[in-house]
Amino acid sequence: MLFFKRGRIPGARSWELKTGLGKEYLKVLAQLDEELKDLDLEVKKVEAQNLSDYKPSLDGEEEMRYFVRLKGTLTPKEARMTGWRIDNLAALAACMSLIVSKQGKSERKELEQIIGEKVGRWRALTLTDAFLRSGYLEEDEEGLMKIGWRTRAELDLESLMMLIAESKPKGTIVDEPSEVSEKADEVESPAETVEAELED
Amino acid sequence: MAEKTSKSAGRRELEELIQTCVSIHNREFSPFLLDISEALRILRRHSKDWKTFSDNLLDMRAITSLARVVGLQSANLRFQSSSLYVDPGMVKQKIHSMSREQLAEYLLLSWHPVVELEQLTEASTKEALDYWQKMLSFFERRKRLQAGPFNEPSAMETAELSRLRIHEEKAFNQRLEDLRLEMKSKSGNDGVDYWKFVKAGSFAQTVLRAQMVSFLVSYGMAILERTEEKMTLIPRDPPFARGQGSPLSLPIPITQEAVAPRAK
Image 1 (spheres, each protein chain N blue to C red):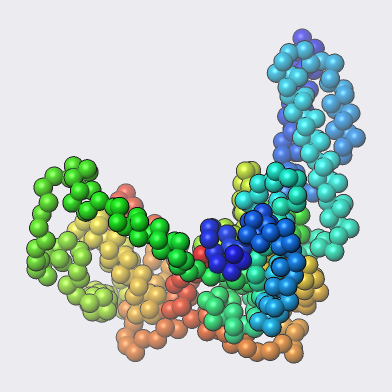
Image 2 (cartoon, rainbow over the protein chains, first blue to last red; image 1 turned 135 degrees about the vertical axis):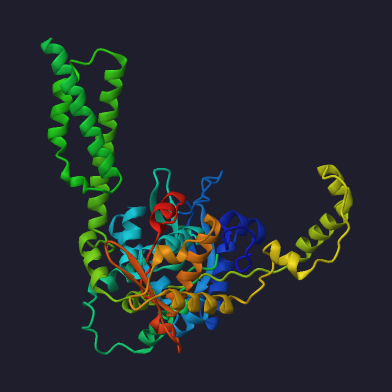
């Protein structure tokens, strides 16, 4: 139930798990989490009211959605193998840090502007759309951009904000591994800048 | 008369207040920029003037907007006391000063992608099979659409395919090279005027040539020099390298009105 995608959003809601596994589903999840450790995976719980598909449960029990996600993090090389480009990663980091600093909501124009500074205006437009499609961003009824379900499931925003806040300006990081920069150079070749879309 | 003027001034003040509140709600300004006590004083000052339904509605909208700003101030304070708080201005400055590689690296250190597997299950396969078996044949479905008589599939010549623009007569690279040679023959020492070169018999042809020229420039087979008055194309000679292509995007709007006078 947690691994296989059955609808638009992966994972399973608490009532689905309760129906499938019984009342003790939380114990089963804890056991699964323990088993997954060996595979560097973990069970992640996200409050459903933070997700776009939130429906209050009838019995008043708190509605949750559970996902299975990577416990550790990816190296730049591994991230590239999954189809993510440096531009996309940088744009997502810029986007999320700005939204978080503005208490979870920001104007689309402002986001596009800040992404545009890093990857160019046209890429900023396509990347914002791609982030919306893949669930990293959501648009509210007033047209403001807010954090999407995927961000809540996948990103450790506290750690990201800490890293951004503690960062030093460009050029002062001397001991950083050169691997990322090399990849970035590859990405920058004009022939490769044709497709910026993320996989949905 | 004085009462009328005071009322319209009051309405204007309330509308301005609502507008400010909306801007704050849209995250354009900090919620603390609005002096709540001053805003309440304005509301109180005019409250006795409101007699009509629309004026009272305006007053109510102003109070609601103000309440939302107070809510935002409260949320802001709670957020500022949380570990996630970083000043938006500082975040912008940090992002501006950081390289893409740095940003990407920070994201990777905080990113735990979700596992998503897509696979056929017995139930979904059964459902698909049922759907397939119950589906009417292509001809039955076509009848419902009343699409007229069905033409049997037939062979088509390459020339016909070219006419329908399904098949290209010349390879793309060959067309680019032909266009470069044409540019070379038309250009003097200072190159050739962009609009003179792309202009063709029809508007569609002009757009097609402009598109091909954009590829020549991107691939480093030609240089586009742009000044305030005109744009000049200068053909280059081989060998061509990707790095020689223009690193900039130069949007050139092409409309029928724009093409006609320029190319004269």
